[in-house]
Length: 49
Image (cartoon, rainbow, N blue to C red; front, side, top):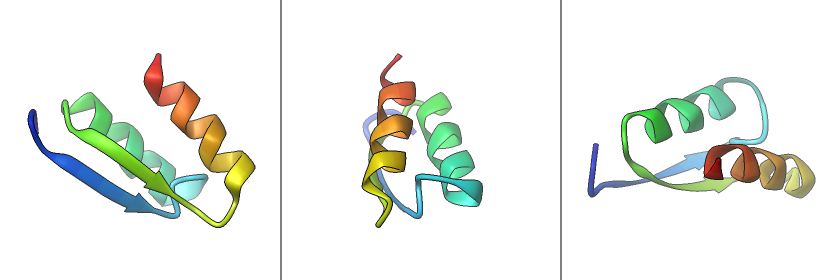
C-alpha cells in the first residue's frame, strides 16, 4: 500500500478505527474522517506514532 492514500470514514471507533490502523500498518497514507472530532483526533495521534 506504499504510495497510496486511504480515506477512512467512521475512523474514531469500531470497524473504521480498525481499518485505519490496518491501512497504516500496510504503509498507506491515511485521511481519517468522523463526526466525532475528538475521537478522530485521538486516532490520528495514535497513528502518527
